[in-house]
Image (cartoon, rainbow, N blue to C red):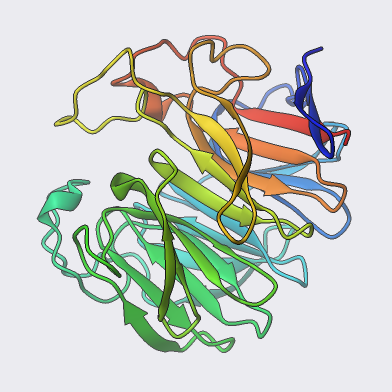
Length: 327
């Protein structure tokens, strides 16, 4: 088996992970989180929206079929409840792990008036929540921060009671502007890392929306996760798959890859690039990343929806992957 990296940042890919349950069709996994017990919870498109595995990949449970228009982002809170984002359902909801609805955050079901034409972020006028929201995190105080998303260009901040406190951002390429704010991570100091996907950058904010910095050494980042090791893990979609209709498909472009940074923005390790996306050490269309307390990396890839306009076929590409830290 190939080994990725060296020294303290060394990983071993786990082939054929997880063990998919018989009788449940999975189109693709769009998100992945790890709860306090080490269970791996995947947000999926297919027969069921939530699939739960143990760390060895054994199937434990599934639920959520018919509850979502199109599942997208997932976040596990400190109490192990799940926040789930339904992009085409224009909703953010909190569930118990067994599938019981706890509450709905903000408006649900009807898109806000941004003027967007389908998923064309070039046509957006910023508005309130939500229009095709994408992801969220919760802070140390339980506040909720939602990236909104495909049909809007803002971050919305809610307090722990689910009350909207503020929003920031707008469409464009300037500071505190976004073209598809697709993912969001948070560190132990409650700094927010927003994956500004179609601007190929990560913008870093305080919880008040103050800009702290911008990282540009990424290609179409989809999600950011800050591990318990304080490293910043970024899932990059790259330029070979998941292209909008107005984008050229370039077979020479750098494809999907995983990057690990310090919180100061120093690149420590990067692998992938999409040249051999069926290989255990490469990627097709990274969409989410999560890291457990031992440093094991889990990734989710949109192998179905990103393949419509792509330089490579998604046939044989896994939608969930696992990389065990050996360093």
